[in-house]
Image (cartoon, rainbow, N blue to C red; front, side, top):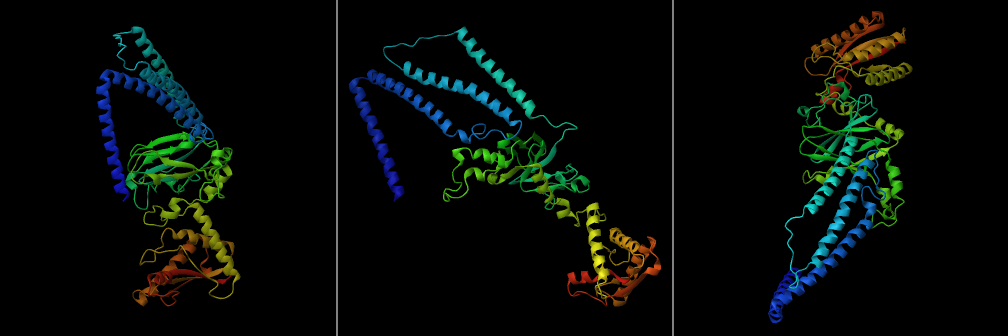
Length: 498
């Protein structure tokens, strides 16, 4: 019904327009074509003046009304050290072009009024005016030269890269449809190598795990940066053209597939400081949620943001990320909570190139756990309580050959035996029930003997050691499941005397 009424209204308006045209045509014939045309020209000239006044007033009033939302005006001064130079360049450009804009429109509409067509006035023809052309050429050229030179000066200042010896921190932003992978360096303050050829489902940006600088790098879902610290952002893309845009910091750089770019900036206002500045403006003393007038105000909900300034596809809107600028202490506390991508996602998998190596932090943590378990066993009573399972002692499948990584935990045991010279232990090998029982018995004995030989080679007296194989006779889990069989394949040591 609504659509039908709409169509009827459109048809009615069309009929009215046609009829008005016919009436105007009849009136023109009655009064004379030239007289009517003069009247129309005069009326249109006057309406041009009215439009000019309304237009310029609307531009001025809207500019004043929305000034608190513009970047570079009101509360939105640049939050980075270089941002003021960019704002200054834009303001100078706005002043120069704004003056031309206003004067041009005043002249344009005034001339439409002043020189509207009339039977009583004949247009004069000016074929050439050297003075006017010189002025019209030189003045814009001088103004443009000034704007371009000042712009280049600002560009050179803003786009300067870091130099050797500079104190800065580098992070990496990799764009894709539709999101960002933000990579931070770890304690070494260096980002590891990466290659697009290594990108896979479990290696989202193609980090080269053989490069040890990658091992402490971590990925973050938001950007957190310390205030006052110089930041170099390494920017690239995995698929299409994106744009790394931090509007409040006046940072904007394309993320181009196959061509890394960068931007260097120094944040000078924390998120809380920016919020406090916004709180002084009535514009931001409004409820963030109109349906909850007692809830948080706009200034309390403010966050810096990372946006993609390219139309990179239907999911373009989801490229937004939160940016937090915090104090140095807050930043350090946040970093301590982050997990290295390698140690949380790659360590111990088929993609780990360091499967046979322990890193210092792992050695320290695992030795502490080993020592704590040993002390508990020494203080306990009963055979089971004094038996400890090796967590990281393994053998090549089907043999008694120790894997290289086994040396670390066995080294902990060597240190413990040296610390407690009166302690003697039994080394026990166990298997699951897969295969022949006699073969399993022989294998368990051989594996216990391999551990025995390792300890003796490290200087432990044979009289303090006893190697025993129990085969499949002492399971601790159900042999009907793979998980249970894995638990039954174990090597243990039991404290005999201490």
